[in-house]
Length: 304
Ligand SMILES: [Zn+2]
Image 1 (cartoon, rainbow, N blue to C red):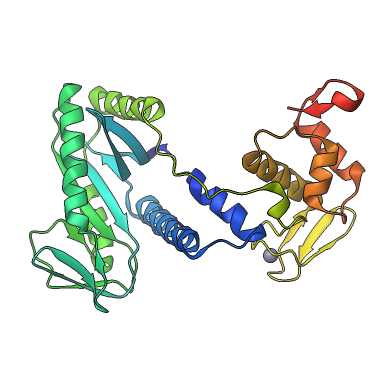
Image 2 (cartoon, rainbow, N blue to C red; image 1 turned 180 degrees about the vertical axis):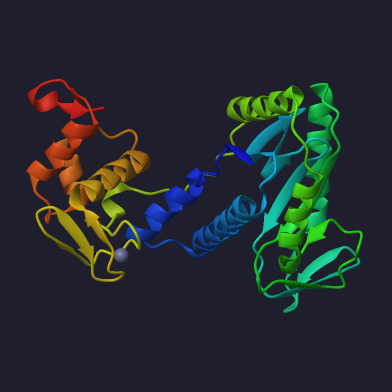
């Protein structure tokens, strides 16, 4: 098994996590953050299943964003085997759901978008794209319900859904059918990565924010807490007991600052203000010198 495209944290999720540490997010953004975190957790768990149970010759591509005739579609996980392309839509829903008359509902009565409709669209778009590329390998698309607490009442045998207790068996059955791949499979994998890199980018916008509204200071790399104790070289978190080198923490805060304020100049003074008063100018300058290039002199000096 070879992973040709790794999963990355979505930009919107990274941004919302930064905002959540230092600002009061409104209810909708809090909910979006929690859904995105839960989604990524589920996808990462499926990645673990794949690396654990798939040992045959298959190519894995995660988190593809593709465009077919102007329509953008996303694939959580795609697996290329000799005679089948597997597409997985991963859902991290917890507790019990019911599917009746095409309605997908939680047992408490909340209606969700029917994941089968979404899956069918993804499959259609991929089929059309591959046929345009002259590739004719059958596609099998499935929804993976990854959360061990999930249970679906009134599921039909023919519905392409794999419930938590079936995932292991499903993946091991792929090994049994798998044979050595050919050149055309590697060509397809390269073509998909290429299409992902040149395709459209869905960029959900972060809520508006202003520098002055942020709580400044160092935060824990693990849990985001401001409750830290610093020594000359290390940073201890009193909330989660995580320990990091101080220079790692400063570097992470520089990346955070660049992410949130790409229009601001990277200077020792700006980073000092962002990291708060507990940290020395010298420590910040050392990290900036190690990882960035100093441009200009005296008052114009900044890093890139
Ligand atoms: Zn912590």
